[in-house]
Length: 218
View (spheres, rainbow, N blue to C red):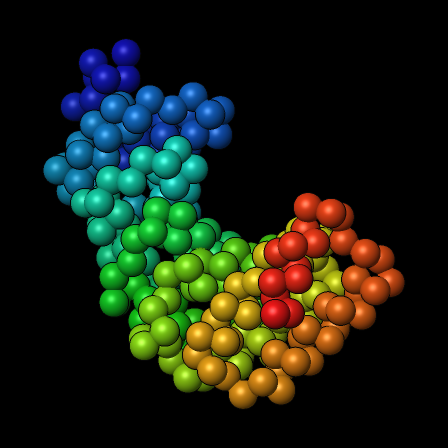
């Protein structure tokens, strides 16, 4: 039925329908592609509110339907509104674009901007972990801002006890990737590794995390 009435869909219809189908894991990739094409062609993506854009981006990332023109339009939306997006929306955007393996220079510049850096202090541990994972996956080493990685390392020290074992190992892996590829001064990284080592000495990680954790120390 959705396909038959596609031409009548406006932005709330597309967002709510795609989000619901992705949440229910009832995704029809062909229908999602048609909805993406309709959204781009109709030109209403620029009118999306920040929460709606975040929901739509998550729906397509979760559905693993990576429609490039739609991603380009949503990337432009994030770039234009990065300074007013909430932490959850920024973290979600970074995670989604990394999941889609999609980026643009302006998007990466927005994610590493000085104005956004100030917002990172208000991220929850889960939001911070998702954001850092996205940066580690998307950010080419030659485009990284020299100030960003030390800032991330410093902030991570305040989140270590808030994360469960899996979340901690994921965050640590991302930070190690960012730090070693950029050849950051090792002081903050060594401090982070030491704190994690102390935690897992008190309570060893599950077997499934042992190898990913060991790789962080190699």
